[in-house]
Image 1 (cartoon, helix red, strand yellow):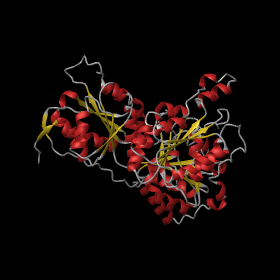
Image 2 (image 1 turned 180 degrees about the vertical axis):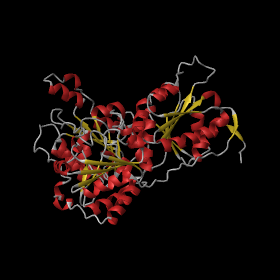
Image 3 (image 1 turned 90 degrees about the horizontal axis):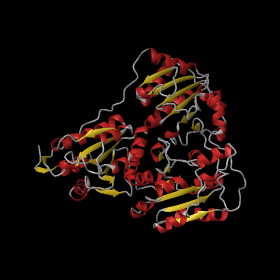
Image 4 (image 1 turned 135 degrees about the horizontal axis):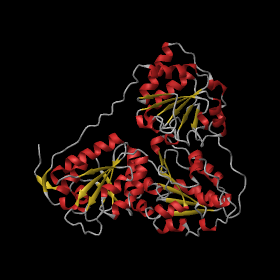
Length: 541
């Protein structure tokens, strides 16, 4: 039944609460401040204020990834929304569902300095757009945005005209169910061909991507039945931790032993991955092999690589279905895992023994941090030259505990997502690896947010005093890289000034002191690794 008359801004706040949302990220302005106030004061929700509008979107994206629910952020109109363009693109390309409640200037005030065509702004990001059509439709429009976010797996921006906010409406609770029941693989020629390829393989490999993270047990059953090793794409990192034939990340981030293993394989059975060219090493790793691709999204099939056969279906149910037919046909196991040296599958190249005085040895520091950091953690990485070694050498407990902010190739997104991840799961510390450029761009303005929120956050800044990807291009062409080099402030000192604890690492002794500080932390901790820009490994892409 409809409730008593209320105001439009109250109806929007209550619609968010009706969807079970208790945390909202954002930055207030004249077009959303009353909605935020009602969400907190009358609804009992928690509002997390960011220092920059785009940060609130990134926090909500991370909240969604870790919690499995739809994250929510809010900003006002005009420049507030344009400040969210990079973050919305990151979410759209990462297929992350979230809702952004964006104010809009009044239709009757076209001369407003902050007026802009907000639909067109959102359109270029790949996010969806949902217009609040009238005050009376606000609850429906918000509910439809939540529905679209879940079904379309991307951010949806709800456009809220400021002149609607103080109009009276009747609020009716509106929540639309989403129909996400998995679909079994139908019988047919494609299934028969896929099972035939797998049955005849002598060296099969099972590859799981981000779309198969809920199918872990079924994929392991299939791999064990086939005696096939297990691998993941980057986004599914950690899915097969502790399995004896886990070869970790498949592709340019593979260990030498895993790369050799892939070269020997004759059939790659892929679940929930679009086979990005980093995963396939631009197709080289799949050349001469039969490829079976299973994905529940038709648009992801053959997006980057055309397989021999594809099944548009649920990963877990398809794996169990293939297993059933292998048993029915009494297909013997391949025996491939019996040929493998398990100890080398996940072993990366050891670090060089020395580095210049006054600098940390990056690879050695990573390996010692892997041993010293809390095991039950959420791992977040910013973008930059440093990141691929982190992806290879720093473990994550599972894919939901691992956040990659590289969907748009941007830097400066990591700390914001670390904050959102920490609020989604307060039981574990969040570990962020970021670069100096990324921290200056997006981290330094939100580190104090983590301090204010009293978060359990460990930030490692790989500071080579340069924009590394550009630095190496000048070096490769025998050109002076000076334009890429910067004299940043001491990040350790800045972290301390912002209310956290900052430690600088430029030797084995200072590294030992920093590692010892990790279990004793009582506030956000920042460890600054001072690196020689000529000694940081190249990106593995």
